[in-house]
Amino acid sequence: MDAALAVSWGFRRRRLANLVVAFVVAASIAAIPVRGDTGSPFISVLVRKIVPGDTQPEQEVIRLGGRVGRPLSIINGFTATVPATSLAVLKQSHNIHSVSLDRVVRPMHAVDGFDGATDVGSMYNTTKIVRAQDLWRNNITGRGIDVALIDSGVVPVNGLSAGDKVVNGPDLSFESQTDNLRYLDTYGHGTHLAGIIAGRGNDAYTTGSYTNHDYFVGVAPDARVVNVKVAESSGATDVSQVIAAIDWVVQHRNDNGLNIRVLNISFGTESAQSYVEDPLAFAAEVAWRSGIVVVAAAGNEGSSATSLSDPAYDPYVIAVGADNPNGTPDTSDDVIPSWSSRGNGQRNPSLVAPGQSIVSLRDVGSSIDANHPEGRVNTRFFKGSGTSQAAAVVSGAAALLLQQRPSLTPDQVKKLLTSTANAVPGVDAGAQGAGLINVRAASAAATPAFTQTHTPATGLGSLESARGSTHLSRDGVELNGEQDIFGAAWDANAWSSAAAAGSSWSGGTWNGNVWAGSDWSGSSWSSSSWSSSSWSSSSWSSSSWSSSSWSSSSWSSSSWSSSSWSSSSWSSSSWSSSSWE
Image (tube, rainbow, N blue to C red; front, side):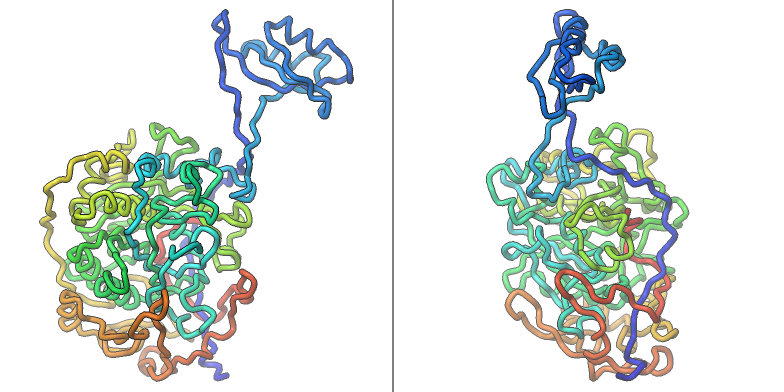
């Protein structure tokens, strides 16, 4: 194989903050204090004796005003209830080996030893925090709503594999040319977000399972994910690929039984131009004006950023910052993570959603999984932080509102979510926007008569400026200038007119080159070979694509046999995940 074709893609991640990893015990304290006649609360305990058969520990419990329960010969002890004020005295008795709080052990069959009740970042607690479970009880689960996910692909793990949970749109990534990689998530980001948006464990189909912490359930468990893959195993993609993906979603939003009403974009660049000119922002606005709620990650640059990420900086879309529950499901002690982008005072996050240490589906063997073993919760789940995760929560919430009221416009969905959000105490508006989403309150609010009147984007600016510092590099040569990934010249006037008219795609052709197939094949959009298209010799290494270029990696038994790509660079991190921890 020509060495020039044996290309691999890498990416240089931003330095991550040092994070403390919390290890969660899969059991929760079951003893609920009950007040006795003296007003002192009683708690349930397990008492272990030093000497088998000794009755003095029982007598000590009674002397302190407690009650002896059942014997536990297997641990040489017994259960008891004692006044909370006597616990310290009981522990110091010379006849007692140990005193511990009684605990309930819950069945973990569905989650491989992970207790969703005790981990604040679990989807069980996340959906409680944003009040999604209240809507589920009224059969509002996102049914009938499709959420397009422009990301790194989706792997059909448990939680995304049952029924038609995932429909594959076109694969516009470089891995589309390899049969065993097409549509699949070699990076690990897209699968994680898909689980948050609409995941549902294969066993979560019984009555009551949605609100049972023993099952994995995303924010909109009956919504469907439309997978539009643009990034490969390192997360590498170009702005032109993301724009082409947005155009495809707009043009095909109602094809083949689809009903795409929400678009999640957790990609972002530091665009060097105003949103009014920016082509990526314009593409997002076209989707918005076409009836699609666009949810964009605000970015993970914290207060150091002079702007939200592109396209989140477009004022029409819903820009999502991250909320940190601070270790408790009680929202009164929440904080905004230091890495969640604040905006510039004119354009700040629209609102925030849980985005710290969110536990979602693990893509075993993906790049993130291989490079961040500290993020693994068990064989099935993975923990990640970022405005990507927060955006996915809001995308699921939007799907719930659109099932409840299908006639809502994107402006009305945004107004409902922002007007009913709860302010995070002690946090300035620049960090939290309207506050933490409360989808139950949004569902109960009257439909607003609301239309945004910001200056509309034109898309007539520079494609290169839209990249900001984010550039693909192949064999040491960066993709830059006014050209797409095929080296085709970028004509902003022609493209923006076609995009606005919903005609930028002709079959599988976009911007003059064949990017994908032209029709549906089963539940997937058909693929196409790129072997006849060559790169610009002046700036993009002058080699051509063929299916053999990416043959070194394969999917085998749920793991990637080649987890790294060794010979190119990715000059900036544009997928808005702060860490995998």
